Image (cartoon, rainbow, N blue to C red):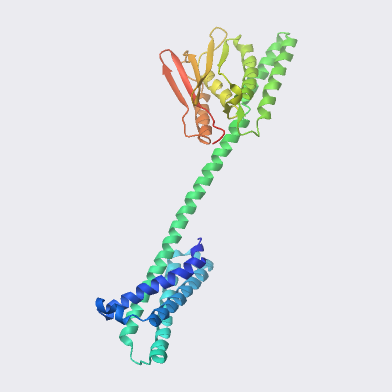
Length: 345
C-alpha cells in the first residue's frame, strides 16, 4: 500500500491545526452557548489543542507505518485492522489523559477536570476513528487503482505483443505454398521460372524483415512489398489477382507494417480467385480511411484463417486509433475501410 500522504509534510502541517480548530469549536459549543464563544475563546487553549492533535497524528502515523512492516499482519487483514485500531485506541487514551492532566493541574491549576477529560477523550477517539477510516479508504482506493493500472499495463503489453507478432508474421502457410510452387516449376523443367520465383520470394521476405523494427511505414514502402506478393501469387492465379492503386500521394500516407498486405490476404481468403476467376481490388483514398473496393465473388465458405486474420487486424488498429475496420457490401461490391494512421498522434 502506498501511504505517501502520511509522510507528506504539507499534510502533516495542515491537518492537525484544522482538526484542532474543529475540536476546540466543538468543545466551546458543548460547554458554552453559541453567543458566548467569542468571549470564551482562548488562543492558548487552541495552541494546546493543536500541539496535542499534532502529537496524536504523528503517533498514529508511526503506528500505521510500523504495522505495515509486520509480515504476519499483512497476511491477515482482520488481525491487522484489529491491531491498528486497538493500538490507536490505547495511544489516544494514554496521550490525551497525560496531556490534559498536565495542562489542567500544572498550567491552569485545576485538580478536578473529569467531565472535560471525558468529553475530550470521546472527541479524540472519534477523531482517531475518522483518521484511520481515511487511512483505510486511501489504502482501498490505492489498491483498486493499482489493480486497474496492472490490468491496463497487461493489456498494453498484450497489444504490443500482438502488434509485434502482426508486424513480424511470416505467414508459414504462404511460405509452404511458395516452396511447393518452386518445386512444381522445377518438375516442369522451368528452371529460369523457378529462379525468378525464388528471387521474388527472397525480396518479399527481405522487405518484411526490413520493417520488423518499424512501428509505422509509408504506404509507398508497403506497396513495394505488395508488388512482390502479387507476382508470387499470380504464378498460381495466372495474373488474375490484380491491385489497382488509386491514391494521390502514397509517400505521405502511413500504415502499420503488413497492414495493407494482410488486408489483401483477408480479401483473398474470402473471395474466389484462381486460374479462371479474376479478383480485382481497387485501393482508394477516402478522407481518413484507405478504402478497398472489389466486385464480390465470395467463396461458399471463407477459409478458416479469415476470422482470425480479421480479428488480428482490428486488434492491431486499437493500438493506434479508436476507429473501426469496416467491411460493407454496397450493391454487388464490397467496401473495406481501413483507418489511416495519423503520425502526429
